[in-house]
Image 1: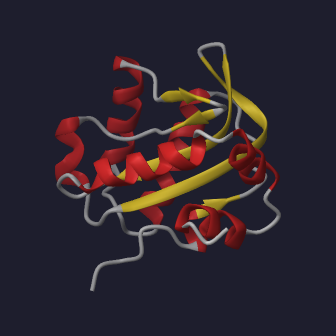
Image 2 (image 1 turned 135 degrees about the vertical axis):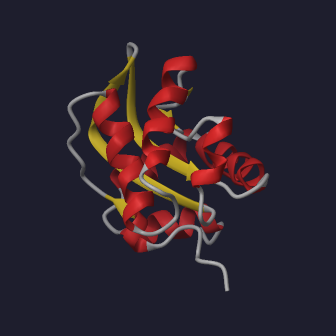
Length: 144
């Protein structure tokens, strides 16, 4: 049976991160710690950020590995890190980091769901102000 894509273990609320690289490494390490990716995937997330930013607007960044990082993905998974004070991504403030690791093309469907949730300013505020990990799971599961 495949692992759940987003669990409470994959979510960190109230993170304080010093810079973009630390934020990406923290987001990626959650995926490593919970068995979604090999440790090498985190370096590929940093490499991807150097090619083009993963900041998508609305205070959201979606760090993920490069195309050749797919071999380091064991299971499709997400990590969500909420940084109430924000992290600087090339002049943009990021409060929500969503790390993605996808087997095959599964990441494309996940990206579209994330984009729909994060396109609404109301949802962004719910995520930033979430007081429980379940609130975040519910929002991404469409339970709200």
